[in-house]
Length: 379
Ligand SMILES: Cc1cc2nc3c(=O)[nH]c(=O)nc-3n(C[C@H](O)[C@H](O)[C@H](O)COP(=O)(O)OP(=O)(O)OC[C@H]3O[C@@H](n4cnc5c(N)ncnc54)[C@H](O)[C@@H]3O)c2cc1C
Image (cartoon, rainbow, N blue to C red; front, side, top):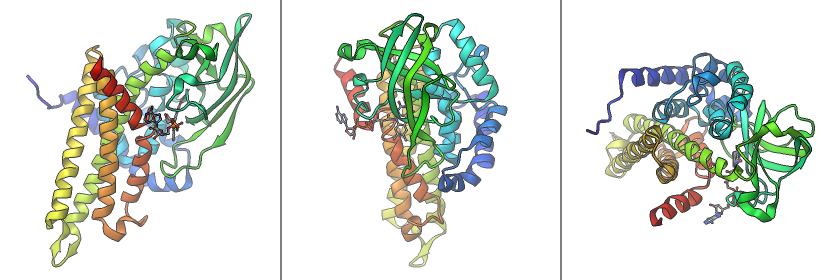
């Protein structure tokens, strides 16, 4: 039987996240956005109530949830602010490679102290010349005795300025393409690691995004994840889970933008009637509600496949592009429904529109996610 009712435990999780997000995040979201401020205090509070490291097992300091339960929490947090929620949730991406390919010793040594202290990490794959074509990355790894020496530059790395550790992808030999790539755990204090330019972005102001510069950074052999040449596969597996997470972020933002538009359409009067009663806007609201509901169902479906241990690469890519396209469309329509006021900073919908745009770009652009989903259909 298929039913969409949440269990009592799931309702409780959802409620805890909703209360936290509406109390601690929503009221300060615009202020943090304008100041591009680091939400350090909010991250610590989220950690204290168990809203971080959702899918990481308990023995490594996480909450040991499946992806469906994590999606419930992620939707609530992102309905309040995508950028602050992104800084709270970054470990699910950044630590993914360690959970997927790390040895027991690596997980205990790196994840446990990070997660217990509420510290955060970063995922370093992208480079200036290697974005969608991540397999063409140029950051070099050279084996010297008992260490690997890393040299290169990563860009667009979320949380780079504040991370306590980085999962970094580098190649032993660019000529080998994806087969030459390795994944490494690099602690913040490693000599030769520095932070470059911090990006000044259109939206998601409090999501810190910066360059990571690696100049002869020495990491012990023990920091290699999996085997040499497995890095690209580890990155792609991490992104499968990451895409379900971003889909849930899209659902949260779309829901918030829809709710703002619905509320406004009931109270704004023109021609003596609430504007929501005009068929042009009423149909727009109907489409927005359908977009939110369908994005959520695709997200839960991909998450449930993952929780059952089944393949979910296509479904994750599909949920990601669909939910984030929905978020962009719903946010744009929410601005339209607010008329001129929608374009001012007096209402939250302009922020939703700016924030939504980024979701169509990171964790694989929506073009790339369509390539992943479309390719799987032909196999
Ligand atoms: C705010 C932000 C945070 C990010 N955080 C991280 C992070 O934490 N870690 C990390 O490693 N990376 C991160 N990224 C990088 C992000 O994943 C890349 O920006 C993204 O993968 C696209 O790469 P690119 O920007 O180089 O664009 P390009 O790859 O140059 O793409 C440009 C355009 O070409 C299109 N395109 C490219 N190839 C194809 C193709 N084969 N078919 C059709 N269209 C194509 C793209 O869809 C896009 O529209 C972040 C990016 C941003 C902006």
